Image (cartoon, rainbow, N blue to C red; front, side, top):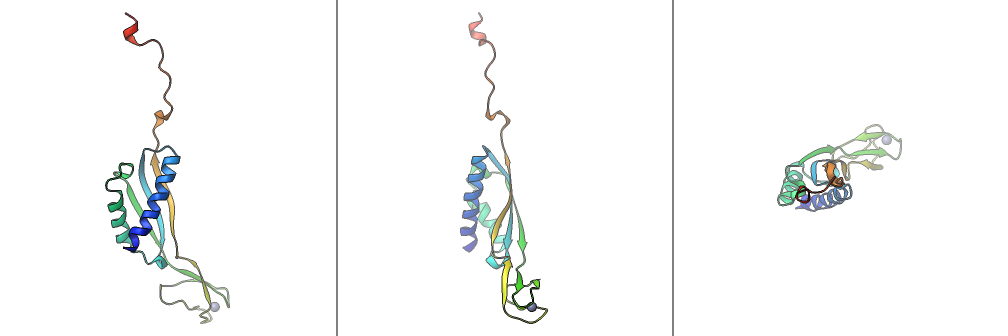
Amino acid sequence: MHELGLMTGVLDAVTQSAVEAGATKVLKVTLSVGEMTEAIEDCLTFAYEALTEENTLFSGSELEIHMVKPRSRCLDCGLEFDHDRFHVTCPQCGSPATQLIAGRDLRIDSIEVDIPDDADPAPAKGAPAAECA
Ligand SMILES: [Zn+2]
């Protein structure tokens, strides 16, 4: 499945960021997914759940996906326009010479993580009770 490969890459990147930040838990991942990637939202969600099922870093986390419509710029008149995956012709001058400027990639918009406050534990004060007797 195409989405499984995409999501594997996303999770690798998210895991790396989370670990670097000292996080113990990923709470939420927000993605922007271009329609030109041909990824299907439901399949991405399914892949995310399948891949994170046994990963405690992601347990209880949420995935939010924003689908991004393809957008191109006309090389003849310079107009930027949204279109679907199959019709890429300038609506203003009819030119087929266009350049895709959005909607072809998958981007991680944000990652919410839980970073424990006690990452740097304060030294214990005083002698342990057992030595006070
Ligand atoms: Zn044009």
